[in-house]
Image 1 (cartoon, each protein chain N blue to C red):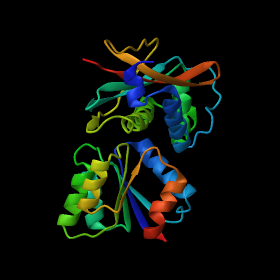
Image 2: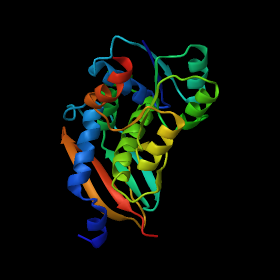
Image 3: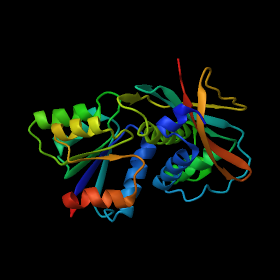
Length: 152
Length: 120
């Protein structure tokens, strides 16, 4: 545990609490069950810039991105398209990012979300320092959120 | 009563609508707009009883939307529902004429607390 982590109170318990608040806010009590018939992975991210600089990532494995989107829209997963997926995962990242930002020194700004989907995504934050990570599992996969400090 | 939800995210408009229902405001008429410009056009043409607006949006931000509404002489009750709820933003929002700022993520209980004085 670094001094930075202690100073900014960004730890896994706080991030885990934010994640649960977001899931509750979008009316998802526990991740819905899903199968692995969809082959995309999706990562949503936002950055915080200002008195504190860093990134918040939301990573979803195959199928969970679609299932989460369907749950947020309250629509059958068969009707979830790229537009819905981008909107929902971007908003999810936006809400988690807003919660993380509220723990950081002001003033700072939250970026618009970026969403990337692909068959085998490997997401990284070059030069970033991982401060905290939280995840929720369902169906053998994990929804993972992480907070990265950009020290440069 | 009529509630205008203004957010560039379709899923967030859906979640706000769902939360309104969960908070007991499901009987009110709900209208939607995808950015501040659309919201302003709708609010001027047919003033709602309450506006729930995001802050960061393309075309026109929620804050500029509120400023334009007040500049047009419309005293429509206005609240922000946004991912950022810093003290500075709350201060600016209130100074511009907003009744409240609800930070995402939110719950039905929070909606009840802030909206009941307006919607009864």
